[in-house]
Amino acid sequence: MGGRVFEEVESERTREVSKSAFEEKGTALRVKLVEAQRALAKADFPVVILFAGVDGGGKGETVNLLTEWLDPRSIVTHAYDRLTEEEGQRPEFWRYWRDLPARGRFGLFLSAWYSAPLVDRAYGRIGKGALERRLARIAAFERTLADDGALILKFWMHLDRVAQQKRLESLQKHPRDHWRISQWDWRNWHRYEQFVDAAEHIINRTSTAEAPWFAVDGRHARYRSLTVLGMVQRALDARLAGRPPPDAGYRARAPARSPAVVGATVKEIKPLTTIDQRHAVGRKVYDKSLARLRSHLYWLAAQNLLHGLSVVLVFEGWDAGGKGGAIRRMVSALDARSYRVHQVSAPSDEERAHHYLWRFWRRMPEAGQVAVFDRSWYGRVLVERVESFATTAEWQRAYAEIRDFEEQLTSHGTLLMKFWLHIDKDEQERRFLLRRDNPYKSWKLTDEDWRNRAKWEAYEDAANDMIASTSTRDAPWTLVPGNNKRHARLEVLRALCGTLEKRLKQRASE
Image 1 (cartoon, rainbow, N blue to C red):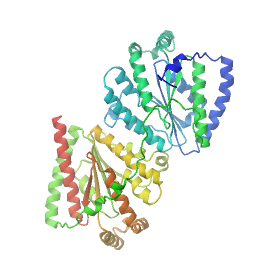
Image 2: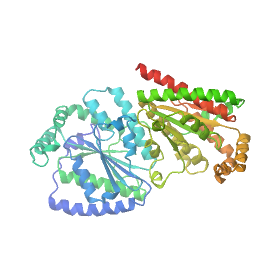
Image 3: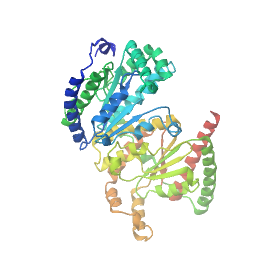
Image 4: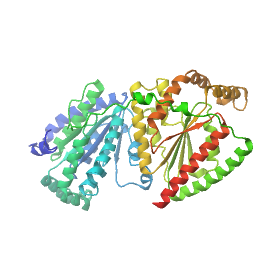
């Protein structure tokens, strides 16, 4: 399609397909779709299909037909309205991540991530700059899904202004469908040009090879159905066969993106070498300081509940580095109802069927709550990198994906703190041996701990790259010297209290 996005659709002289022709073509198409769905069930990717377009363009009818033709047990359909209270307490894309389909399944999305930017731009609530920022967020989201293998198809169901008016009037008069037309549909129709201009710009900016837009004439139901479902079938068959998609869709002139890799300058940075382990804290000083800091944290946590600040705390570090001990001293100063500790291990079958960030998005806390992660999404660039559970391309692009994920948290107002508890190799060996010989702690030491220790240098390189690549202004890493456990625990509490106190003052002044 060239020139204006909708010119070709509006200039088409499509005719309604006859009932007999539809039954003939539809039967053959349905058989192909069912066969493709069966093959998809064994495939290692999901299908994400987004429907947008003018009111009355046939979005809902097309979704219903697709669900009717296929086995609905492997299809999840989501239509979004205004944010619920639960959704409003989390970043915008939380509800979309939560609803993503597993590998081998379809996800059908109505009024999804394009709806709010489109409506806000059409009604003049946001300018071009704000629109561009929101589209950049959407493009990053879709790129993250596509890089993980998702087949993404986006359909704009189009009607010209006159055709839309006739469709709305027809539906409003129909005794079965009149409820579907509201005053908002007519308000949107009166701003038809603004909606089309905004949609044209959105499609130009976000139609890519990985997530193409298809503009479809919505005037004739049978033609529309065969067109959309035919595109879905051909694209799915092509992906299953490992071929390029047969339909180009609308290709925007988007700038090429550079791969998210660790650059040479980052590899030269070794943050762990800057950590000074020459710290010693006596028992009396420790007990007194610990009591004071926990009391202060308890008061801050109470204020946090009042101000509704979401807090996410990430703990990473070496095996036996003191993460568990620091977490226990911290959460014992919190109301048990206000926090949750997530001990992250190998993903479950359900979690493996989704993007690796899916399970972490679902655990983001609501307003006033604290989420503590003992290990986290950084497993992608640590253990999965070192143990080759992720390909080089997967862990290299994860740096950009993680920065984007964390930027969404912090821009929403979430307080995100990341702690690396560092011990040296000799101290780790000493703690391993103590665990081995202590009947109360021997269960903590596993064969996997010894295997990881044998790869110390590889994990050290990965940790240095991780810290250098993902420490940002709003989500910096706090490097904690951990050879002295007492010092490490106090440092975590000091850092948390200081940052939380500062953020609560900012929140109170807003």
